[in-house]
Image 1 (cartoon, rainbow, N blue to C red):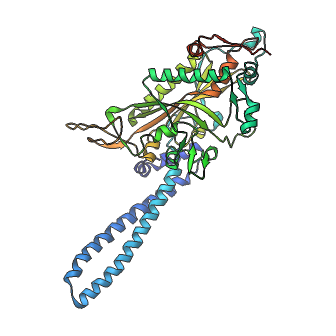
Image 2: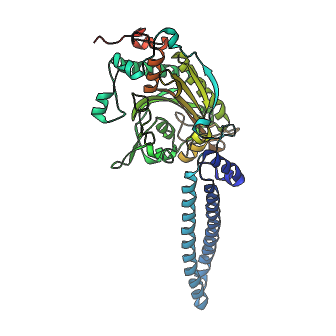
Image 3: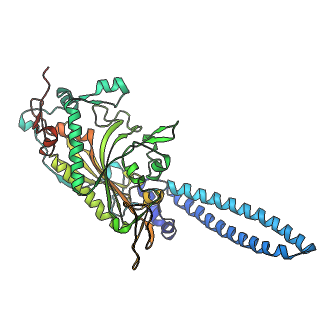
Length: 442
């Protein structure tokens, strides 16, 4: 959620942000109205309570008709206090409900528009000319079947459409990717994390995934738990309700988890193979930083993603995602899209978002600045802290390796004429030194 004080001081910025997102601009004015009622009813409640307390001190000293009159007045005040309390609670609940519906404020440099209105920032690598090499590229599913690496038919038989098995060298390729990604993240100073795949509603709502993304979320009604679509959820909620020492920041975590997505709005889209599936594994980077450091950290996360895709020897581009294609929690998002030869276009492989203070306010994660002459202390980067001013911090996330899409890009870009696939050097140590994945003998 955004800062209510900022909303009051500069409502036009919030209106412009909603307009850029293609969201309801009137929500801003509804929120301002509810906030005004919340504040005025709070003042009214405090005034009545003060009057009630003052009257309570007079009653024991009074007698006769005076006391009866005071008691009558006390009875009316009690009813007024109760009504004012109810009005304040209702206004507060409405304010919070509207505040949770408002997306993060879009960064002023974000291109305005829909999905196709992104701006290309960089292009890396060379797209292969398969025609010049004398053969037509096979798609990832045909290659995966030749290698004995992907089985979507039995995935559908066991679980339904958009499920799959990674078999043989396919399973080994996933493990190689995960281990290589974790090795890069650890070398960059990230703490490796294996995170829960099931989270409570407050964790899912706190990260912003129960708004516009709710249709893609799996919910277990009996347990009131959600299956995560990304380990970002668990990593963001890891420090929920905590105050972190400023001198311990940045905190960086690399989470590995299964991810689950309904893909409710993508019927008939990318149905062949394993590009768009309901379950996949992913290595996710997550950072907690001071708000003033979030833009620099965003660039660092992007640089680590570029380092990873370059190590995999994939041609890719970096785009600045347009305002209408941002998730509700992101103020700005960069995507790295790899070239997919058989589709003849770039497709998203990694994404990194600067969520500024949006998630930390919803999850009640704050930082304590170190005050002069006072030591700030806490254990293991969290818990209690003492010292200077307390304020919300910023959170950022960045995909390092979404496994199925990365396998798609590797198979198609590194294929050879006979259906074998060259292994990028960065993965060879994790595949027993194997340089080429060979088709299975029929």
